[in-house]
Structures are given as C-alpha cells and as structure tokens.
Image (cartoon, rainbow, N blue to C red; front, side, top):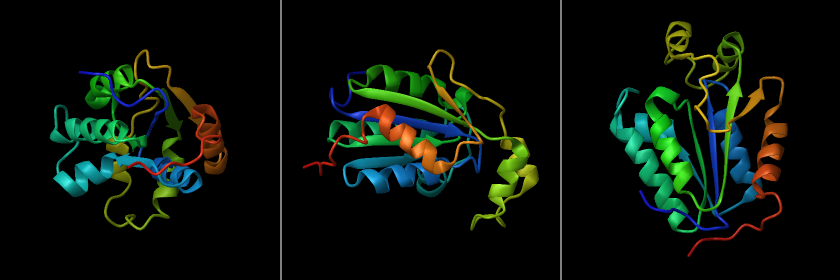
Amino acid sequence: MSPVGSESSKLVILRGNSASGKSTIAAEIRARYGRGLAIVAQDNLRRDVLREHDQPNAANIGLIDLTARYALNHGFHVVVEGILYSSHYGDMLATLTADHRGTTRLYYLDVPFEETLRRHATKPVANEYGEAEMRAWYRQLDLLPGSGEHVLPAEMGSGEIVQLVLADTGLASQPAVVPL
C-alpha cells in the first residue's frame, strides 16, 4: 500500500479477548484526549455495519484498514480495537503499522478466561451470548508475530492502562486538535 498519516499522527492497536476491556480503554483514551482521535472498533464495523461473522478474508478486515487509513490521512489519531485474531487480521495490521508514518503502538490485553466471563456478566450484552461462545472465541496470548506488541496483564486497571498508552504514544502531552 502507501504511506499513511503524518509524522505526528498516532496509531494505537488494542487487541485482546472478548470482555478484556478494549472498548472501555479506547473510550477513555478518547475522553481524556478529546476531539481529533478516532476509534475504529472491530465490533462496530463487523457486527453493526456489515453484520458478518468473524472469519478469514471477511470484508470487515479491509473496512477496518480503510477506515483507519482514512482517519489518519484526515488528521485524526486512531485507536483500532477488537479481538482481531492474529490469523485473520495479522497481515492487515502488519501492513497498516508498516505504512503508518507516525508513532504506532500495539497492546494486547492478557486477561484469563475466567475473568473475561466475570466481566462479560456485567455488560449490557450479557444475555446475547454466554460461556460457550466466549470459550470458542478465546485465544490465549494470540500475539501478532514480530509486532513488538506490549502485553498488558489483567492486574493492570483500565485507568493505569489508559495512562500508559497516553504517555507511551505522546498523546498525554499533545494538545487535542480538531481536524479540518
């Protein structure tokens, strides 16, 4: 593909199993940063926009890539978040991160299965799917090969993770800018 974003743009990839805290952390990063940060959520694009199953070569993979690139090229910092299995999304994420001209950081939320079940029970979608589905989706340490992904343990609270990401990317010290 071609270079994406700018020298000053930030790209954050947040991956982990269902109910590991990805969406909560992405929302809090944006809340603390302000306008000018786009969240590209796998669940939104795959389930809500396309209503497709998570499988290799599915349309949502390209849509996630296209959406992140569009936002970066239009002056937004971007957080891509989702389960994003390495086997399905690894090539796309590797190309996106290689093409990004600015700061890129990848994080994997390592939360044990039992804890994901506990967290899931507190969510509004808790009645839509349960333990059997979550067990089928669960992949322990599904890291992207050669990505330098930072593994964040379940013991880290969401506030601590948000602070780490903001500091690690430079978003903590960068004033929010509303893209034109």
